[in-house]
Length: 474
Image (cartoon, rainbow, N blue to C red; front, top):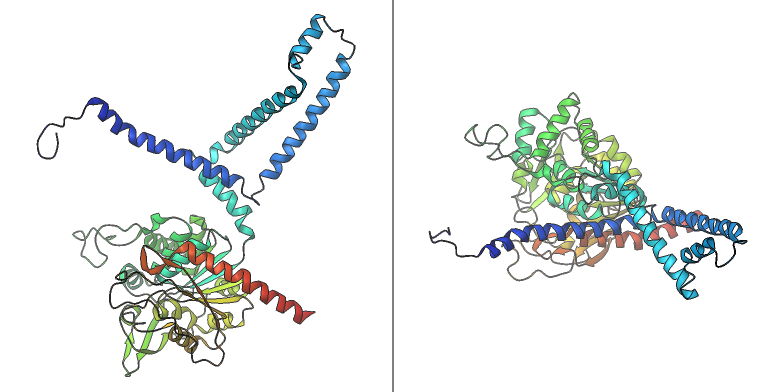
């Protein structure tokens, strides 16, 4: 019956076709996955092709040896006899001479390919969670190829940091996300208040970007509603936030060690670290002298003149400082300037470590202004505010989007960041313009485009820095 109460007059054949459509779709998806996995197995640097070629060379030499032995054993066989007839049939003597080697070669390659495919499938079957075996080849690709990628540190918070991590993880597995711990709203704020732990929301987003999106699932309800009407005590909390809180408790309240344990359990590509193990309170003063306390309020405030955190003498995460010192590339942003990026750089140890690092330091400016903290702020204004808080020389390159947003793509009063340049600084960093906006959401970056642009900057600027360093030490 249809929704209006009338009998559905479709034929049985039509019903069969409808039922077969999902099967056909799944079959096509499986075939696409198999092809993609085959390409990944043959990716340069994964360490498979060389051993396949070595195996083929060994089989070829073995075949030549076997042919030599057969020739020596059968050289005295008389033609026309039973043995000679069998040998003539086996060696295709009844075919023209050029076809004999071609047929034998084709049959041999087919058998070799089938045997290798079946052998690899049998050996890897226990490690494949899915029919396509994608997880196994992904792990091998990560260990063999991406492990040789550059050491990249991304400092920030919010959705911008997780966005760039999704793109960068396709270029390197040597990733470190240093995440701000000043958030005081939503689920993170509730857990911070009830459990006394630093906010975990931005850390969860980064873990989800490098491990799995299941961490982003939220339980029904709201964390501020009364249970059970609001969905129970877990209402509104993301799975990842609960996991991080649990890991911290398992480590006896040591937040840094809890995050490290989460990295190990989730087998993330790289590592996600808090900027500090102590929750911070963000403060801001506006141009008219008003002081606002708390990240959730500051993000709605315009005309910010100065920002700072308390306690001001908090020790930074040691692993974060080590990652900064060892980095080839440090990316600041993207994300909310005052509430996502600056809280980490306002910690003296992190700010000094970034300033002293020999790595290339790239600031990724947001593609659009935010109603509140960066309203009407242009590109030069973003850089001036960053340098005013983190110090001169904190960045080498500024990356900004140069693709205009479609009319009406942004909700007012947000606007594309105006590409006003240069800033009023003694020495302005170099600016690089590129198309890095998400075509489906003009207020944020596209992960793949942004990562590709950043890697191009590293390839170009990093090579120049290495040449300069070599000339100085020569």
